[in-house]
Length: 109
Image 1 (cartoon, one colour):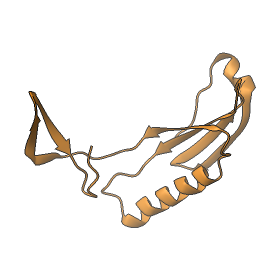
Image 2: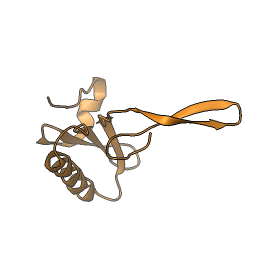
Image 3: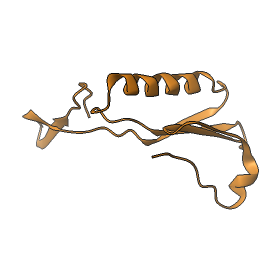
Image 4: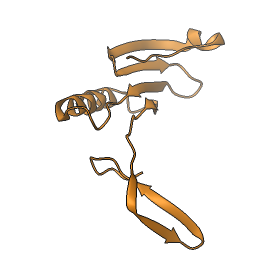
């Protein structure tokens, strides 16, 4: 388990900083033309992990977000790792049939 970034070409020369927070979070800060860019790469725990593990991940993510300069363009990317399941109820809107997907924690996708 882990994550990181692969930088190709001239992008490597624009790196201001890199931080590996833990095996599930890392961030890189890049110099760009108008303002700096912060990319946060996530690998979130699934709903079948313990509440403690999920809370630690989201606490760590919030700490990283809070430490990002407000002037930076911020992009959070990676694997949100949602475990999806089908609702028993199908919804119909006009002629489009769709299903709600919901995790055990109640998040709807």
